[in-house]
Amino acid sequence: MNLNEALNKLKEAGYKYTNKRAMILEFFANEGRYRTAKELLSYMEPHYDGISFDTIYRNLHLFNELGILESTELDGEKHYQIRCANHHHHHFICRKCGATKRIQICPMDMIDDDLSGYMIEGHKFEVYGLCPACQAA
Amino acid sequence: MNLNEALNKLKEAGYKYTNKRAMILEFFANEGRYRTAKELLSYMEPHYDGISFDTIYRNLHLFNELGILESTELDGEKHYQIRCANHHHHHFICRKCGATKRIQICPMDMIDDDLSGYMIEGHKFEVYGLCPACQAA
DNA sequence: AACCTAAACCGTAACAATTCTTATTTACAT
DNA sequence: ATGTAAATAAGAATTGTTACGGTTTAGGTT
Image 1: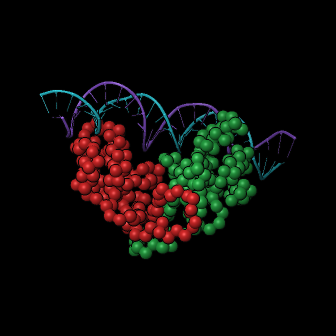
Image 2: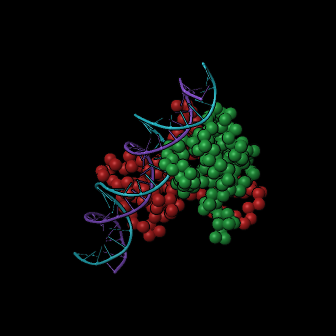
């Protein structure tokens, strides 16, 4: 998903356009990997002096709900990245830099256990480790 | 893993036997599903008035390191359960009560993506939803 | 059985991430 | 231009967790 697609999604859902929201989405569109609320705040602060935590967290939650961002937890802290637009898939995630690499298979296609009676609402499959760049460093 | 196996594992690793540790392990052995530090604390308090947070968290970490407990995160809070003794597998986890049901397949066996150059250190596969009992309720 | 020592524990403070509250400002439909 | 609901700022509060200095205890050693 690129910046324009994200902004359209926001507009279609009936939310207001603000410069801060645009900059948040621009941040994630440019980064293309998992980042924390704190990192986003550091990016915003020079441009919007005195920007509030509230603005950061409120919008991260909103974008997550709207499916613009996706989230995971690395090292006890929530990380966000822009959601890939196309079909369902999973990721290898670098624990150091948050970079991701797509994994095509989905284990839900392969479960042969009997889960009848269990209401399945979601699943998570993530592979963790170090990307090539972080190994070199 | 049952209570005795857990206590043996503790002893073999050279840690002291204490009544509090025994009660912590007894709690998880009886529960058999994911519980929070807070729930453990509530269980302990009537028996050990004034028990410290430190004791709870220190031992949860210890047991986790020793492989006696395993952990996951539900709704922003760490949950622990006694680790199943036998071979590697994954779980369906009830988001409401923490009950688990084993899933036999492991997606790592099925990845056909090229991850050469990526150092794989771990993975997580969990299915979330409601168990039969919590749907009925 | 008293003793020793490191481990375990208590009480409490600190901490970091996140959420909440109230007043103010802003986007944008009218 | 104006009105109104949404968005934001400022900062306090909450939550889950970790840290610290002093005290107690388990378990080995006389």
